Length: 319
Image 1 (cartoon, rainbow, N blue to C red):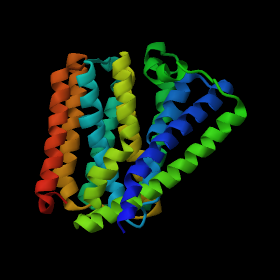
Image 2: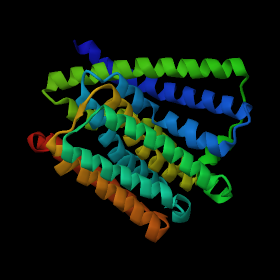
Image 3: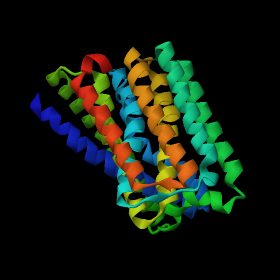
Image 4: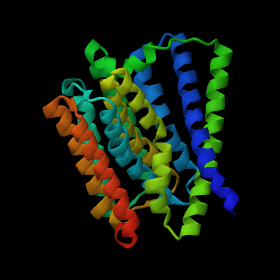
């Protein structure tokens, strides 16, 4: 039914506000409990920005193609759109020394996903291993940064600017309301996306790679654009790096632990190379140019636009 398609814009709106309320409520509760801003940035904000992708994967177990499409498409959109657009707003200076480890982990997780593409699926034990790997990653980053004030800035900048402006009851309500909005937003969004795929004769993978990926990446895109406008460049870049790590280890990990996620050949021969190229481009810009310039941002957007155009023009080759 055509009205189901309204679930796509409605779902995106609910996902956006659900993620925002969950992050604000969780951040406020953690600050009131005396948790250091750096730790909040590493955990609450990181989980919160990937919450739309995660909840969408949970409600997509009957359409596992959406899960892998969401993860890959979101990671590509995070760099091609979020970083690309943010760099056009303002050239982004970023210190390689403060995010060397995170950038390396992002590439390792990307290569791990490439190995899964060779195998052809992600099953229960892979999902469990990914979630455990994420917990190890968080612990290692905490251990590395706990005495490094400069290294903490990228995680704590957004936390410290607000402070706990609400009381405990309001913060608890925000967390609960955020979770409810996330669930129903994901439900409406996925139902609408599946209906759109059926109407257009498109696969779940294509819908996941384009529609679902862009929709669930809105928090990252908004955070990066706002951070770039404020001149908080390290925050913009670290937000995307962390989100891409969480998407693979947490979003795919949770999804694969619930249902076997098939990975078709086109993921290996087309989509993963695009993700790898964009990831290497971002790393090279940070490593050798100390940031991402407007020309590099424009190149990222161009690569993303070409990627989407090829998928639409040649669906039989890319899906």
